[in-house]
Image (cartoon, rainbow over all chains, first blue to last red; front, top):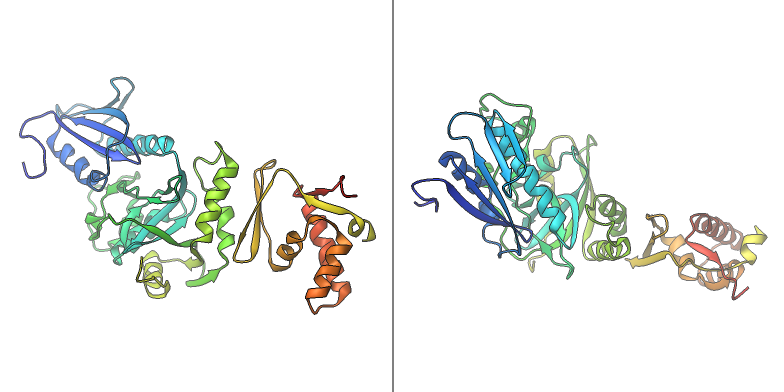
Length: 280
Length: 95
């Protein structure tokens, strides 16, 4: 088949998330295609060392069931909740296994230049990233800025997890049938964009303040250090080393404060006012 | 004022400093906290190598065209804050 899936099930695919190899077997061809589409931007990455296996069953019309490594079971009556839970586990696995610096942040790119928006859950990172993708930036991650121990940015293009409200900001004309309070997984292609596959250099860090007046102001690079440290997932292993990595990130990038209320307006402002070097 | 300016101070063992664009950011390993210093505090931090606060005032007064009393007040305030935060300690060897 053109999408790489066999004509008869169960359907199996593998992806690599930040060095963790994920193998998933699904008994439903529609869901298998959807998951493979959503994880498609992760498949070009080199194979990781660890393999985690998932099985998803639900094609018989009863509950949807998710098993991990043949063990733990998650059961739900809706496919959307299963997908949300599946991606939540994948996210936890990928970030737990990543040996470099992982900071809670949205990341987009133009060419080889990457912009990070560090922030806590619920701050609007995914919406801002989705708006930037819709405005023409390439997608890197809506979840984490990942820097390996050599200081290189590692893309983490998991599917964007958007609430219904976020989807309406980015695609106001889209009809969402039977919206649920949980989040929807969408790929950058679903937003009319694409994931970045270039080697990336983090050139800008933007501290976004949702609710502030629309404006973009340059700030000293050192001011992003406390925020990057505060938002790092894994600094407790070696805090001093993490501080040095974060300081290197701050040293090598320009820092900005962004005030906004409408994510699409903010994306337009970033596109217009953030300078990008032609060399990156 | 005189008391703190008479002390010789050094960077605490748990403090990790990084200079970015001329300003220092200090990570305190003991308290897992970060302090970003402004221009004047960074200039003072740079001189905390075991010399006294008064010697720091002398050095800054030599380089900057500012009122010596103002420099003294700045140095005293910055040293007080850095010592309270545990980023500077009294240099028992040099004093």
